Amino acid sequence: MGSEMTAAAFGEIGKVRRDPYAMLPFLGYHLGDYFNHWLDYGRDLPNAPRIFGVNWFRKDENGDFIWPGFGENMRVLKWIIDRIKGRASAVESPIGWMPRYQDLDWEGLTDFTQEDFDKIMSIDREAWKKEVINHEELFATAYDKLPKEFLFMRELLLSALWRSPEKWGLAEER
Image (cartoon, rainbow, N blue to C red; front, side, top):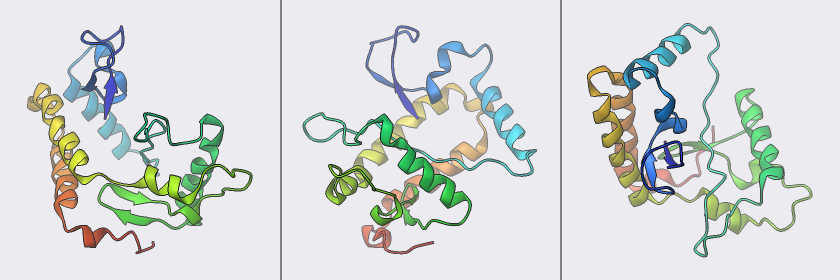
């Protein structure tokens, strides 16, 4: 995860840095210990929560936000709940399982088209590769205590991004 620097984080305001949940300025102990604490906590849960990544702030070529706004987030949250309960489909992509346009409830939203949805769901493989490679900076700061799962997941993600684009036709449902 990356976040823009704010007044709380030293550095150039607005510059993106590798900082999960913008927490680095507030951690009172080693980052690796922090990650391991949460992984250990999750391992002990009988029904650990699912994790979904959402980027509400993706912009188009003009710098405008593509997603129609905060009030529409419930459409995606509904899909997430339905997905967890086995009532919704998803298609596999290099970065995880994603909804198709028809998997979300668009009732009452007329100005967000399937073309808009396709834009927001598109995957720029080269940009993602650069993003994942930039994780090295964060990983190096915690290397001595970094959970090995982070390294394995990073390698799996890079491998998926390098695979043939035909593999990710976004047609296979599960």
